[in-house]
Amino acid sequence: MTKSRFTYASYIRTTPEALWDALVNPEKTRMYWFDSRLQSDWTVGSNWQFLSPDGRVINSGQVLENTAPTRLALSWRNELKPLLRAEGFSRLVLDNEQQGDLIKLILSQEIDRPASALIEDVADGWPIILSSLKSLLETGVPFEVTRHWPKGL
Figure (tube, rainbow, N blue to C red):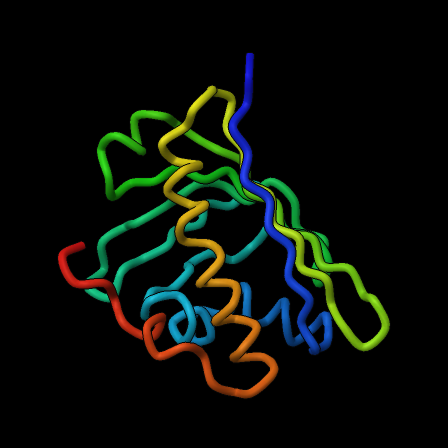
């Protein structure tokens, strides 16, 4: 079966520990991920949820791998949009590689289906989210647009 995949890399001047904290700490995710938060204990096999500011479940899945602070793999299903939910679970992998005083963050999300609407959707969202994360870690200030939930969702 043909897979759909989105891959993105970013270089961030930070430490592995600070990046990891920003990826899994709900108070940090709210700052750069549209005022939403991740909820999990991050143990392999545990469930995770991504919650909107009003408490709706946006995405959910299971923790597949956790090698803090260098790798996190999740099963991922969109719960907010019926078309995307119908596609089922994708796999998200976040790898953090030390490169001198930088961390190379590599994100890969894939699903076992060709021409995935989910992958098209996340490919539109991940770049601004990860760029705002980079700004937060390097300057202490995320992008203004990523601090608030989008109107109409």
